[in-house]
Image 1 (cartoon, helix red, strand yellow):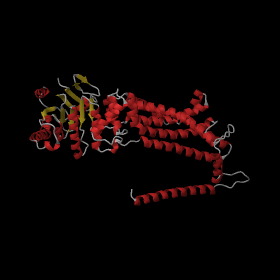
Image 2 (cartoon, each protein chain N blue to C red):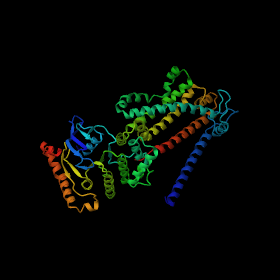
Image 3 (cartoon, helix red, strand yellow):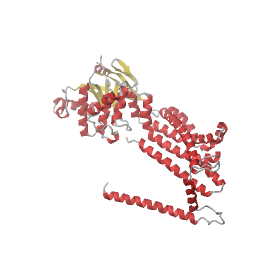
Image 4 (cartoon, helix red, strand yellow):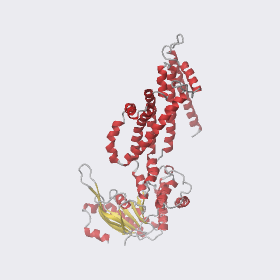
Length: 277
Length: 269
């Protein structure tokens, strides 16, 4: 049985000023295996961040549900940690305190010394040694998201949810932090669901890429395998013919098919069922 | 900062100080010139700045004497006033922050109670005085209650606003981490709303200090407000003017404390 199951999830937003309810996406149905890295790509408004929030338990689905490790999840919990696009660090806390509050919550039985060592270990892991006592405002975007990653990994969740984690980081830093994420993921073998609209990022990081059609009323169109051997690096991957093929395919999907499928009134039910298997 | 900038800044500061002192000299001169000379030991009109300064010197030199109900040093009176403030203001602040956090966290409740808060807010705290005198039957505690009323609303309104506008992200992170409500309150909610809360506390402190003078004039007995009224009854205008200046000075000192606190709790995102 699959580790994380997204079961026919549909989300409507309540309409305003007499407008009917707005369907963001419907019948999204797929599975993620344990230790798998799955990225979801789609245009703005296809509801991919909403789906991530539903998995996190921060929003509720209109229909359908999420099953993690055999149990349905409806509320937030320590088994799912989110890395946010805008970092969501507490600005009144130092780097150290931001990670410590997560560690204390995740391991309530630990004594001070053990917590301190563990927090330090994760600070060192993301290369922020020496910046422990700085506030987030004193850090660059890349450094802030390193804190975000350290906080999420430190909790050792069953599933890591990345919500466009590098969208607000400048292009050069983004590459470095992506490789850091690969390193951390290889070390922990966490199950990861990432939402992004950066095709290169999706190919570099994931085992599978889920493609969403345009919203409103978006659907999961297909899931493609990324069969590029690991470990991957930004430098080596661009030489790989598979990389070029997938990139072309995904970009073609985003430019043409994502809109066409929506205009045709969505996909046939039969096509969607194939995906579910 | 380079040398030229520093020189410019020092010059700017010197200009400010000189202008400020010049202004003071002009005001004091104007005051002195409009004071009629004393006739046979009795002063017609307002006492001049030198008489006030002389009186101020006497009072400040010996602030803590106590020669019966109508003759106490300025320090003693200020301690009485500040003591009332401390009790009424502290209790009001705790109540206001507590209620403010609850209202801030539950928007429905906030909206339901907001009309009443809006009606209660503009009422002069002194208007409650008769009710307090009737119910508490103790004038000293009635004054404390006036301070309570005067320092409740700004803190309550600011806390509710500060808590209700905490960024969703911070609360989401708390939910994901399943942080206990106690730790969530002290580590997330209060620090996030702290700048707004301290701004409210600062306004409350100002209105409490304004209200105490009037309240003490009404209840009599002790305090800086009573001192002003008592000296007026004695026709000691030098003391009245001196007391007015003291009220202003203490008000500034209290405010400076809050400006410091505001700096500590402010954060940049």
